[in-house]
Length: 192
Image (cartoon, rainbow, N blue to C red):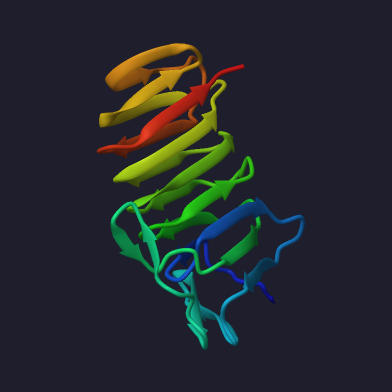
């Protein structure tokens, strides 16, 4: 676990080596990073606190889990490494990675996620959210939010309605926006 304070407005999170990342709002001015990895002897949270932004990275040493055959592909995923990061509301959050599942527990921060594959659970959209991924599933609850989503080969389901390739909706009197751009991911949005 690491806990620190920063004047930087941007938090960059690099998810290499992780299976899951959970983002929550902090109830203080501190950024808190909790790392749990079963299959390694030594897990390190690397923090690079710069003037413009903070980089949060992870390094693992020790026993690597065995290769797992999954649908004809050999993968080293399932390292059983999960991180929970609590972030003050005033910070912008950027997540970068390849194959990782992301859960944002109704985050009130501006959020941008750039990953290859994964399951992304955004909870209720409370601020600007931008998501780019190749494949996976996306879940979010949208209310009083501008929506702009594209999925070339995946399906887009808003409540019980299914749309092909694109869906766009402008809300009245709102400046919150969710933008999702994907090639193969399925997008499931619900509005209350």
